[in-house]
Length: 90
Image (cartoon, rainbow, N blue to C red; front, side, top):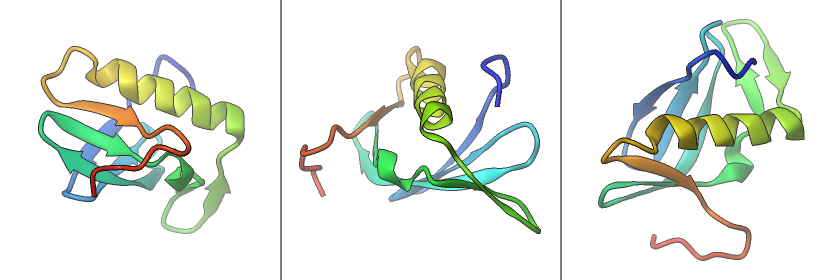
């Protein structure tokens, strides 16, 4: 994944499907709150396609989280990542 590529985010009440421009996707678990979504970073583990699963490295995971937050920073609906040890509102 490169920083120039956008991610497509499709929301649901307790998860978001994140898809890159290559058609790979993963399910980002979390909690819907007013004005946004608190995402669980531990759910970023592998890209999925129709016929394969590709593990996501820690450096790519960090890049994905940064990109998601940057894509939503100007939006009234923001996606942030839960800090380790922080209890969510659910």
